[in-house]
Image (cartoon, rainbow, N blue to C red; front, side, top):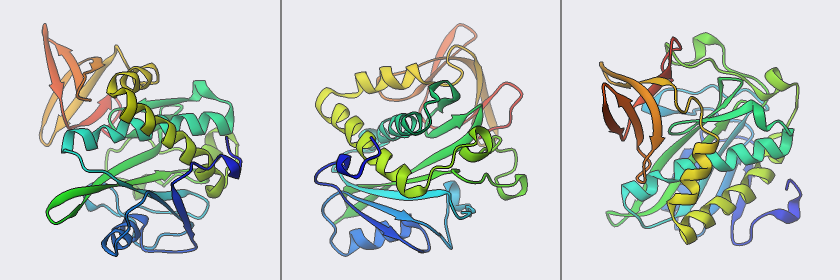
Length: 259
C-alpha cells in the first residue's frame, strides 16, 4: 500500500519544503485555475491554522497536507468527506503500523490513538462564480511529536504522537503514499455506492459508540448515549427517552475535556 506504484491515477501531488500552510497553498492553486485533484504536502508550515482560525504548531516530521478535490455539491454532501477522509487516515495508519486496535475515529473529524488526539481534518469549500467547485481537505497528523499542553486550545483532548505512543517512525512522504490510495478508495465507495457503506465502516471504527458523550454548542451542552450516526452524517444522542440529531458540535467523553 505504501509503494509509489500504488499512487492513484488521475491525482497529482506536490511536496513543498516550506509554505505558510497547505490550506493557503491549495487556495492559491485553485484560484490560479487548478481543475484536477491535487495533494499538497508541506514539510514545514510557518502560519498553519486549524478550527476557528487558531494557530497550529508544526514540528518537523509531523504531517501537514491538503487535498484539493474538485466537487460540485451542497454543504451536506461536502461534509460527508469528513467520514471518507477519517476512514482513509485510519486505514493508512493501520497499514503502516499493523496496530488496528490502537486507533479509533472521533466524530466528526478526528483520529484517536490510545484515546488521545493524533490527527485532525479541516474541510473548506472553494467556489468559482459563487458556486461550490472544490473541497479543500486539510489534514494534520502528529507523526513525530505532539503539541505541548500550552500549544493547544484550552481544555482540548490530550494530544499524542505516533512516535511517542507506538515508537514507530513514519516519514511524512510515506504517510502520504499510504493515505492517497486509501482516500481514493473511500471516495470511490462514496460516489459509486453512497454513504451507507461509508457510514457502516466508520461506525465499526468509532470511539465511544454506545457510551455517554457530551456535545457542546457554545455555552450549551447536551449529554447522552452516542447511539449512532444517521444517514446524513449527524451524531445521534439518546437522552431522557429522546433522540437528538447533532449536525455540528464539540464532543467530549465523560470526564475528558472537549476536543
